[in-house]
Image (cartoon, rainbow, N blue to C red; front, side, top):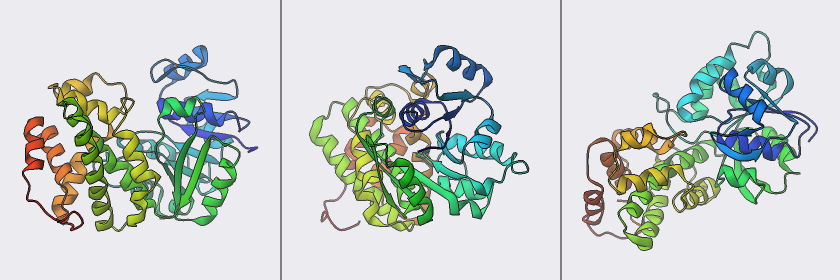
Length: 342
């Protein structure tokens, strides 16, 4: 890869991608949220707040200026929480008179429905930058903890786009990054739904662990969770096969079984009796599953989609249901055939 790459977002995953990609691209432009944070990263050459101990190579150009990214990079990764995505895109749109935004490939990594509109990320892109942006839009998702990506440990993810030409360009970009293997598909909606809904199941798995319910219970939640994810995705027009892949089952397994998972960690703390507001106020990073649970619950109710795990997670987070009572509610449901949808 001979061209510079832009990364907007200097949290843990944005920093990890910059460190990883810097070994294969001539320059990485890492866009920080503020001038102060950019100056700190330039001075220290590591991200003390989100990825401490990982050195930023000299070819990682740290900036707080969108123009520096747009001027030098054609492929731009947006690595921000879903709740921040709309405002970031509004900022980018301000440059449309200076730069032709149709010249760029935008790769989204947000996993959630945190926007108040409850739209998937691709719809947020479309709403701000126009329908034409979807011709050069892609989403990257899958089991990829930032700390392991930053250490160049083997990782497999998927990249989805509506446009096969964009996928071909991204295949060319990733082909030399042997430790970061990609698989491609066209089901953007399925990839984004899988990345969002799995965070709710991870919260449930964490609550179960926090209650000390054991490995059997966690395995049951993960297994029934993938059924719930698939049911929700199909109802919204996604391909059911996507949920058996990296952005579905793969990401769900990782996020629901590791203490590196923000969503599972939040769930564990809730299961142990901590209050959600207290947990979130002390977190540096975003647990996407909290806002996503509210959005998915609302959509499921409106469309009559059967989502028992999501229902109880929502009730624990926002209605005061005790975690132990949530487990009882799941166990007391009527017995049914495993492969009948309701």
